[in-house]
Length: 164
Image 1: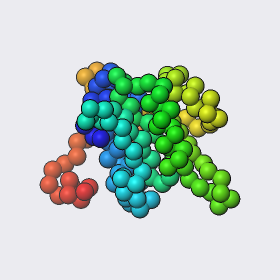
Image 2 (image 1 turned 60 degrees about the vertical axis):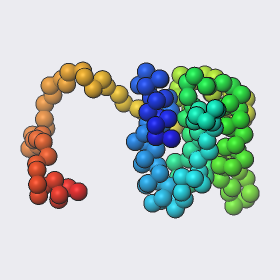
Image 3 (image 1 turned 180 degrees about the horizontal axis):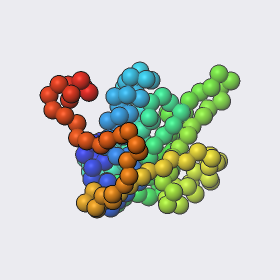
């Protein structure tokens, strides 16, 4: 899954249209194992073609949400409909009154996925996720520092160990 996300990130011109590898690592360790007490194998579903991973669904911890990670060369309406079927049948949270709840996610520019969600009865929430980006090789502009603060590199040795 990690290698798949690396490839997808590059194929998507370094836009996060699927999870970033760091997000998967954080979800696996913190939100799944540490918070929800579930293994990734309990909240992730994989799709393969010719022995290659082409898509997966994953929850960021407990049931009740589904994040779609799809190879851009394999993205079809049929695949995503099948993924949503799996999410609805296996990833929905069951509330105390037996109703089922599932939150699904879509990048703002993915009109195909958004249309599928609308056709299937989902509604857009008021909550927005912001992803801030910058080119790593772009120059860093000068800024002023608030009085009383300094910016410096993290020291070696004891300071580094104290931070860990």
